[in-house]
Length: 309
Image 1 (cartoon, one colour):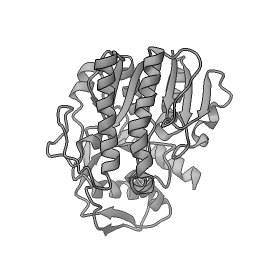
Image 2 (cartoon, rainbow, N blue to C red):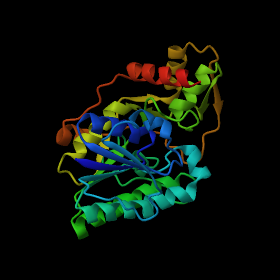
Image 3 (cartoon, rainbow, N blue to C red):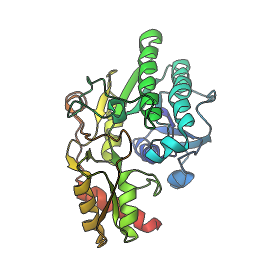
């Protein structure tokens, strides 16, 4: 297939490009580099089946030639971005998704939206199934990302129902691995960066809030399986093994040999207290479940950050 990835120079987009090329597809990575980096795709520069286009998806997208699939990953996604580039997040979720869907419609291509567990907000149901509508504060600082993705899901389903676009929606839970930005603002690079600098790890709140961590190769496998499926309704993809942030901090300190311990700071507004995917649909529809153990994935991620610092 010939596949366009918006956000193709980002953390997940670069790994997805690697996988699709390895599977024999042609890949066009489109990115405005607001959070992505050409460093993430530099190793693909000599690949004749890979092309990079510098472009902002909130502007009209023109790609010559046929496309078999559009995978829309473009969006800043880190907590620091929610206050740094909030309007850009809203624009890429709305205008960017509209443009990407329009391209898929024009090319008669299948379309995959990279949505997020953030559509569930601070959930009142645990674990979170796809049938849960969420508990989101639309005017909070996190709301720019949460609501942008909720709108993106709504317009994706509208294009499917009205225009017959062959759509997919993947709800991505916490994902980690090499090529994350060290200044990403999310818990994995924050903790690893502090640990490698031999600083105490900053835990917000009492550390009892939970997350579940999926290694990037597992996520990409789920994305590819969903793209190749016939499923139109949202599908959660993430690791259902839940752990507290305090326990995760202790794990990072242990794996890095960091003696500096942990410090506590106030919890940011609207920070979800619990986060765990119900992956029943992914297991049933895609025969998918994560396979990379946390210790193995973190070893790869720590080695990557160590090489970059």
